[in-house]
Length: 131
Image 1 (cartoon, rainbow, N blue to C red):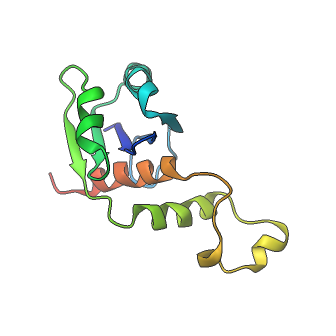
Image 2: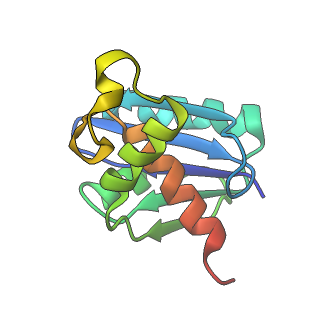
């Protein structure tokens, strides 16, 4: 099952297209909320998405309305601690280099927003959920 995960916010939204838990993402990105609907339609067509999983947080209801695609189920997923876990996942994929590798990971902040990694975790939680 191919899932589009969305981490909604008020100004930007992270997205991730995944085909399975712990599988490499097919697409990752962060877009402004006003460009999200067009981006979602493109992703659904390109990757043949089967479901959309949206983090149940800030602006979730408005995001769900704006990305409604024909006959695609939309589910809301708990996004508890996704930001913290997204940072850890980011550093797993992009280990610190130079002097930053000497600092404990819990004290480091990524050099960019990790909303796309939060969306990846939301999609994986959806895939883990019992049917």
